[in-house]
Image 1 (cartoon, rainbow, N blue to C red):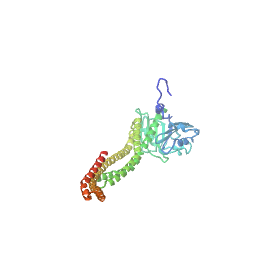
Image 2 (image 1 turned 90 degrees about the vertical axis):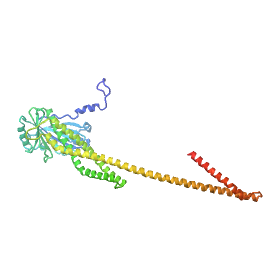
Image 3 (image 1 turned 120 degrees about the vertical axis):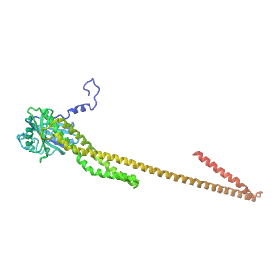
Image 4 (image 1 turned 180 degrees about the vertical axis):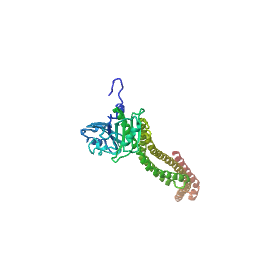
Length: 438
């Protein structure tokens, strides 16, 4: 379908690709607000299962799977809104509601889960495994004195050690968190914006902070795999070095080396197949974390570290471990390939030598066979000649009996040269004919 007759026909994916820029618009959040955010892995969870769970919300009984095909859905419910987003590896649920009374600045570690607007038990029944759960509280407050604001935020978080940032080039808000997992399973992030903070700005702030924490945790999923792979890589590298040494010293048979190398290569390829996606995803998520940190445009508050500084300092060793492990795995695979090629070359050379020796033996055998055949042919000429002369002798004896003046012995003796020459000449012609045909 063309939007105008002035253009050629649309590419089938044009509209889909164009609208991707509008696929996940940030929420509009009016301060003060509570955002309850949960991200869950969805590897074994279908859209049908997620749709079935969303239907349990009030008034959503008629929700269809077709409405979830775009991987984004915002539901407006009594007293709150819920946003559902499905990504490649995880699904996010964001519940935005007014901030409960008594949970603003001045409170100390307030109860937020008890004020959740969704039906009881609905959050606990979400399909999937939790990877991130955050209570993001956004309030209005003065930020002209960041130190005083930070003291209030620290008290609100329960007087833990916190990290904080004055966000925006002109300092439009303060974000504070302690990165603690509380007994209810949630982290807490407090955002303080000046009176008059627009709903769209509050929505963008919330989106960046929630995405930042989600991508941080998704990036770190590669760390356990990298640590678990370390002993296997060390053992495989040692085994490969031993194979190479045996290959150099010729201290073992090629077949034994080949069997050992095949087993090693199979283990390396299995590890590559199992972990290459996770390591690639870790790199991608780490890039997203860096981008979201840059988008915050943080300014430090004296006496505490910024969110970006804290994350990078804690994430850098983990990302370096994952990157180093991925490089070790790729390097080990390349080295196994080169060693396999070297061993195959040695086996090919040995096989070629064996083939040459076998060919030499076959050639020698053929020469002996030809000599034997020549000897047999000589004996055959003598034998045939003997039988022909015997026939001539019997023929002479028969003629003598018939009264012919023939001496059989003289006739047979005189015929010997002629018979020998005739048999030899006939054999020669047969050989010439056979050679001519081949």
